[in-house]
Picture 1 (tube, one colour):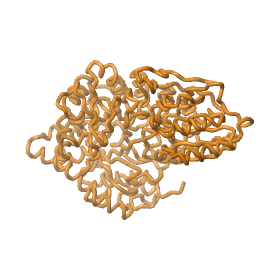
Picture 2 (cartoon, rainbow, N blue to C red):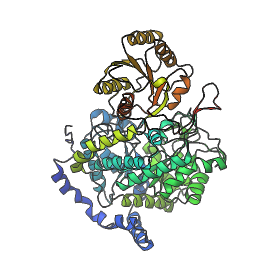
Picture 3 (cartoon, helix red, strand yellow):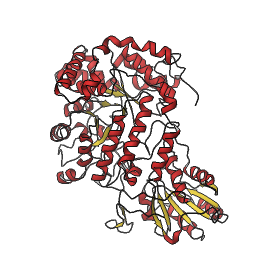
Picture 4 (cartoon, rainbow, N blue to C red):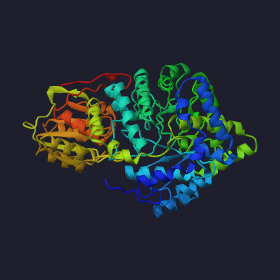
Length: 616
């Protein structure tokens, strides 16, 4: 991997960068020992740590306090010298040219990285960007380290791709049922993030996915059993935080039973309070017991918890009454992105951040207009709607988190560790072994699987090729074909898409005539999907056909004639390669369904229950 750390915020090497870093030692010295104090349970130590943090807060201006509450995007690979296109986008959306100008103007407490914001080219560049952001922030009057965050859930949602290690997603981990694997995932991912200067990961997803039609959670959830989800959430939290990265349980009070995507609409959860206690609340309680550093709100309406019609993000009964007072949580509460439609339906962008703070939120994530949101909070304090003491409460929680994760002692990335931490052979091998334990064999009639290269030498891989999750190789058919070829087959790939036309289906059937076996990658098959036609036509050729459901395991309900079917729960390389090893019999399938699959003709009845899974 080439070293691209040549921007003006990177210095000329690790030695020079280290000598430049102590420019804010005078401020950080006031917090000496805070990391240790805040990890020791003794009340006296905690009180001493809080006194020091309150001292930092007392020296802040009101404008600096407002800034500490915001976590925002910024475009570009460098804090001071981004590409011109990113400068232009920053000017349009944020009114500044660079991350450096953003920090100087708004004194934000956090920045979130996105691949689409061009923050995440490669590990060394990410580390240089992180250090550039920290240097700029610490060089401000009364400067403090920035909490740098991202969404590295693994599976379907990742912002930092190869060569970083990409692990199986939550529902795959749910199929593996191993708390040890969940903790290992957090530990590996956390170590790699920390080496790149990322201190907070908006993971794990603590939603219990009980709605197969959920368009926004789905395979991002560990499953439909609240106790199983809770155990894996707690394990992953401990893994991340053992590596020095703040975990974040989301989306409180529970986003698992929605049929509306809160990015684009306003979901309503109709659970009773009793059902919420038994279902949605269980993983969040477990996360809190595990000491989770942060909890993210959901932009969902939950009438049984608050009848006002407000989203949970803006609900004082939900965030203060339930999360703070009933569940006893005193860590950082962060909103989901304030640019999502679910939180913007009832109120304007100037009211949303103020109402969120009044509800009990600490961090305001990615408002559509930072200037509007920042000035709205400032004005609310100036006119008395919010008190400065209220801001101080949230800033204290944020500073506690920063101290607990070591930012006040050492906020820097660890570029010297990148080569021996990020995407190492050991990490990649571990990811592959975890994936093997998650692949689930749903159907295997007449011992269709495993395929044998001596018998089924020529394998045709067809099917859906959805856009590959961030940073993976893709497309799925190509990855599967390449992996099968490495295992001794002569495999070829033919992409047929998620909605194959009649001509495409005919082409696939013709190609199958020259194959000894066929693998079909399916993606979110519905009753009217032409993917069903593709599978039926391929079955009619008489060739052995194995379906690989590369996202939702529910596909099998729409494919009743299939004699062999695997579920991978995502279409990242690590999961597809593990599936190839299972198809080839190199690995015995061990995964078990973490969600039930209902019958297509009668959704009130289960086709396969939680825990179903076959083996060889």
